[in-house]
Length: 548
Image 1 (cartoon, helix red, strand yellow):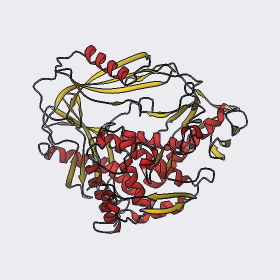
Image 2 (spheres, one colour; image 1 turned 90 degrees about the horizontal axis):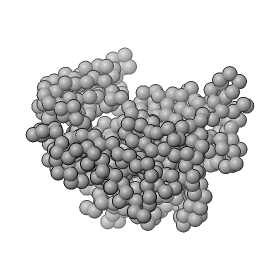
Image 3 (tube, one colour; image 1 turned 60 degrees about the vertical axis):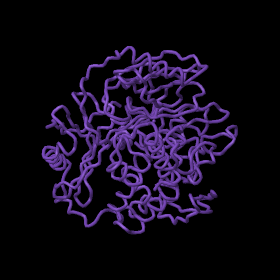
Image 4 (cartoon, one colour; image 1 turned 135 degrees about the horizontal axis):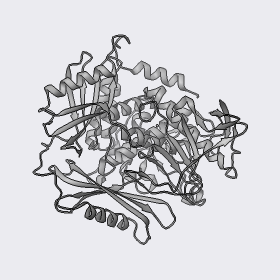
């Protein structure tokens, strides 16, 4: 029988309308609710799950060669418990080995969702391909992904894993290769290589940030919780896990799985009078105001709407790095540093990348990494990206900011006229960006994850708002459907509740679009009952994007 580690996996690396939104979600919670005093605790859930694993090890594919460690624990209002595990085989991480055990309020077993059902047994865990060879292959893949560019400071770190997501289980090297492009911006590639033959299995992008007031670039004048240290105020929020923002001073770094180099340390923003920024880029703290605000609102959304205490659900804050690189037109979340990083944009296509929905999008990658862990490749990669677009949009609506009203446009504040369109992506009709898929087909998995995400983005819009023409907060939408069906939306609050539960309870690292349909139907059933309006609308919205 497998050994079970009963602790949450450690990390390498965190208004208007609140009352109404919260009230709506409270009404939608599971019922009848268990009395708080009788509801199982996290510790009880762990004990119950451990007993289930001991009794059902064989049914879950666990053997004496394997260990299971807890990644996350969810206890529902009615006392039902959901414990998510990662597994190792002879101490090697199993890619696709994650599973979720579902328990009734009394702790009895209800079922499990597994990323793979393959029997995990290998003739040997000794690779025939040495680690330096795997590193070379990953570096070559990184350079090949950036043709015509001279990459600098390229590093690669291979790690042996057991791959169960690409056919029969096999020993593989999972190598993270990273470097800097000719402009000094970070680039990275994760490469999965067969450890016996050296054949590449898969590859994907490796880069997935006292009360004062601040003048922001995009969101007007904002209240900020800060820390008084002596006679100086720090842009550090003690009410949200110590979340803070620092200046990267136009420097860059290279990050691998073992951490980041010291080329881009941050200097914590401080101020003498607790009035931050000027509303223009002339003041370096202006972008910091937007970044800190984005972190604050994202924290509040997850806590007040979904009961999640920080990105890692552990009460710990993240931090932001602004003014990263020179003309860097991107933003990214990095699990290794548990931080958000923002470039200033190239000035032609993009301004500073500190828009509210951009911040919420990137930080939601952190939530995904701590829950379903959707692999950033193929259809699961598209779902990973769409999850961030969905929650980035919901955070923007949740904020109720008159200077940045909620919409179904992604990144509209950071886009400049030189890009030739007014947003990065469009959820009502994703193909408006020139590359995203409106509907599922068998080749969607071959698209970039930023384009394959269109299927789930379209589903989310239809589930919340429905099909056809309409105007929301002054923005006009006209969402089509596959086959011309009509969908009547059930609202943003229910979209968020269903997607969050599906992500945290039912999805696994290998979930594809068919699996996402099942996961969201399960979530709708849990929250609103089987056969009700919400359940049938989830089914209709997926069919409307050709996921059946």
